[in-house]
Amino acid sequence: MNVMILGAGGREYSIGRAMKDDENVDKLYFCPGNGATHNLGENVDIKDYHELAQFAKDNDIEFTIVGPEAPLVDGVVDIFKAEGLTIFGPSAQAAQLEGSKVYMKNFLAKYDIPTAAYIETDHIETAFKFIDTLDAPIVVKADGLCGGKGVIIAMSRDEAKKATSEMLSGTSFGDAGLKIIIEEFLDGYELSMFAICDGDDFVLLQAAQDHKRLLDGDKGPNTGGMGAYAPTPLVDDELYEKVKDRVIRPTLAGMKKEGAPFEGVLFIGIMVVNGEPITLEFNVRFGDPECEILMPLMKSSVFDLFYKAATGKLNELNVEFYDKYAVGVVMASKDYPYSSSTPAQIIVDEIHHEEIANNTHISYAGVSLLDDTLCATGGRVLVCVGLGDSIKQARDRAYMLCGQVHFAGKKIRTDIAYQALR
Image 1 (cartoon, rainbow, N blue to C red):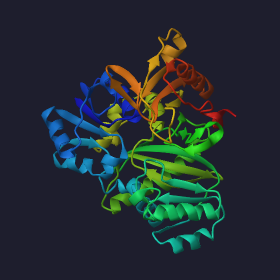
Image 2: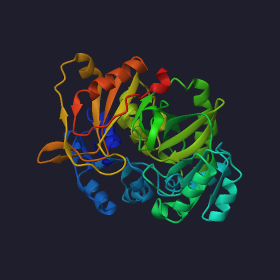
Image 3: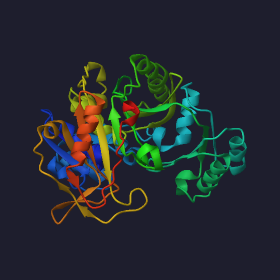
Image 4: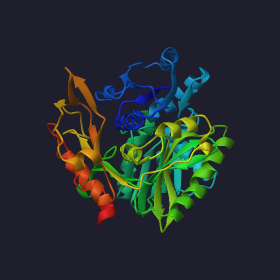
């Protein structure tokens, strides 16, 4: 069948790459796609979701996959379903698990899903009083969508109050910060877990860890993610079962009770404290760059996984993963994450080394075709992905590929996966 993927980043490129040669897929469409997705399928640029649904009908697109959070929160799934189209992702109501951090935290509390102590407020005095009861670090979160950047970890009460003032005044994140969450800081290690859900059943993918800070050693500002690896050795079968029993199952049951069954990708940010999983946040789509490393670890069909989730048939599926590790290293532009950079031509050396050719690939993200030349035009430009029988082997291969890719001002971290290798 014909399949359309909504989005323009490395996440969507990776999903398309995983489906390109699937026997069930005749043709891929990307909306809007990027400067490299045309190598996998056809790019279309339609911004109105009603027009896009009509385009899907006119072009016999039988299945649509939504990559980013914004279309989900805006209701693209509801629009497509109203037209009788099959689409993978949560409804607008269910997408509030990411669209509103206040909704998410209150949902966790209502259904007894372990999370950090918190308050939600739009009142500065209330916020300051709660801050005075906490020890630093203190977490301050904007309620709405902020492109993955609406969380401040304040290292003092004064810093927390400053972040609170800037959010509630609209200075930091505009309307997205006019209501905030303040919560206790949890001391443990962080994981990214992804459950593919059909409203009733789910498939839990391998746990990943990403690297949010810009610089080596987890220094510098937060970013959308500078690299990731999976599966992490910090998770055993017991922890997987705890996440299933204490987080995923009560979430799916709770969302049904709320009248918003959850279908799509449930991205769970977990903090493991003394062996116990505490839910930091939900997102309603794949993380980026986690998606880029999880897709090549899928031995069974990625198409089948998403399609059966979208049609309520996950219980029919036997999902298999390769017994390998994947490491992704993000190449960012010169001025990321501070400002946009001047477009720069991307040159990829011809690869003669069999080890690199057979065990690595590039997932393109912030790229455009300018005069038929592939150029870096976004903040996070691409992800070099390496596969191996160990994390070290996968990491080494990813960095070998990094050495083959060139553009002016390219910026990478050199210590991706250090947590697993130290």
